[in-house]
Image (cartoon, rainbow, N blue to C red; front, side, top):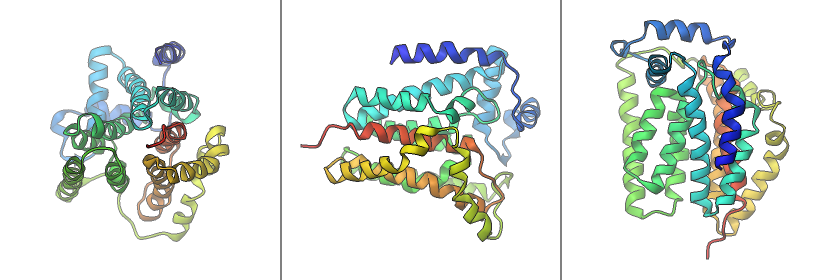
Length: 295
């Protein structure tokens, strides 16, 4: 794992000095220049703005902390895969699959589309096993980093209920997590929402959302070629007693369904960076195929 990280860092570190040319960069940069803690009066990704501001203050470069977050995402992917499969080799395989993804490598150092939200969300799943009081907290942090993670609630609850932790912890984590989402939903109605504005249902946009996966991930040949075989494999291992075979099927299916829901019910469009979680769960799913069988 150390060798993998060293190789990744040595190859990608040069991107920190390259000027970002993504379409939304100018808008994000202008917002960061005017942003402060006093600006938290609207529903924006303030956690992302805060971390980017810290990156500029400490390193004089907006890209450093996003890059560190991407490195940490690789580590957490390894840790959660190792935890649920009880095999370190499965964690290595999952990390390598994520690392070869063109979507991940495209957005690993960007300022416009950081991986903070994915990192916090995945950490919330991992801490459900290792230190459960942190799980709802990390989920809470993921929402102001990217409000889309609020839609991951059903998948989170399913994962928690299928986890190998005590029933009491499952109920506590699930209760706190649901409470956080409800409290956040109530709070968001009291402030000016600037993202994901609701609009009347558009059937055409909803149908087009099902096709976004095909062209947004056209550069990820491994994901495109092996998505269906992976789902079949996860179904087979889930029948063999591996609980998280079902969980990964739910995560992958949920990520594919969020795209049409997002375009059909809001004014948001599907961008490739929103499929990074799909690639993450695809990678973990491959690791789950290597799980130790339950006795």
